[in-house]
Length: 453
Image (cartoon, rainbow, N blue to C red; front, side):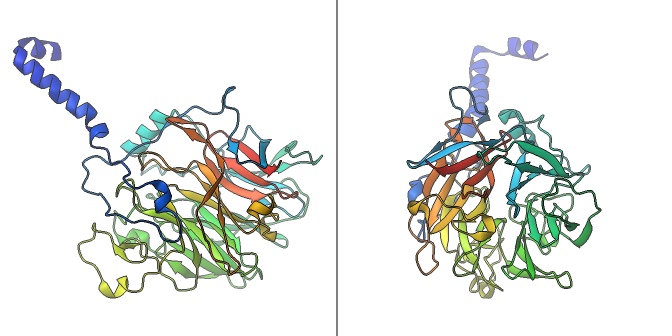
């Protein structure tokens, strides 16, 4: 049929039709938003902020193509003075890591939950097709890794807890192991040294989930005194696209009192907080936050910030201390005046996940030398929504003696992506018993070990 229509067209119409078809095919490239500000200027304590560009006809979509680690590109690159080696492989979507007191490492093998009533959208299916990851699956479990001979490589692996629903964060308090799934906090009895838990779980509390659950990861962190459990709960959508009713008690960090399992909202207005850690000296709670997408390649910066009780960071109506998101026609001026300023910009669309302070007892006292003595390591998973791409690395942010983030991010591990080729995706991190930094690579199903050379 199409061939007959084409044959009946005049040469002029064929030319015009061909030009129109070419324009439609090339439109996403020609009209694609590109970053105008050098990336370095959008990081640090005083980032350069520009007008969001939401008027573009085509949103930025720059996923890259997953190729994995090959013979000519076997591992990520590190800065001078450090070395990287393989700690474990043959995992299934290792998302998060946790160090047990005896040196064992727990790994959450997980992926985003897919509801039978909410199928992946066109862009998600296109992403899976372009990156060649559409056939990936996850067993939704926690695996235990053990380095029994202390050579820096796991030699024992066992299934620690099975049959979970998109597990992520892990925390241990005495003989109780807490696990955060996408919809609940669970508690298990724990005995030091065991390699498998068969006892049933006790549900501590349910967590917001539902059919629409864009930011599904649920990280947890114990307070230094062990009384409270902090839970990072991301938003259901990008900017409350389906209304605020769906976002109830989301885009926030919860504080759960473990004496009675009650909870309250500790900090709000955080689109997607994931990594959390207490500063080793000041004991202040810090988090990395993934900000909104689809407002251009230069905006909005993802950030690292200290969380205080009652702080409000503006999502969804505001960003970066009170700038209004123009998707919302009515702005509440009184609410705008209460928005908290983030402490430190990591740059737009880097997608920060894990946060580990150097020499923090809770994460194995990571010791990578004097150059990385006082500060935090942050994994940047990388985003689809910036051109050119950003993230796909591990950075170090220095802190001063007052416990404040300062300077510019220092790249510590890089080359998870080069050009259009994606070799891996850094996710969860923790220290090991020797002071090295372990980095989960959820795309290539490996865990890397970063240590002093």
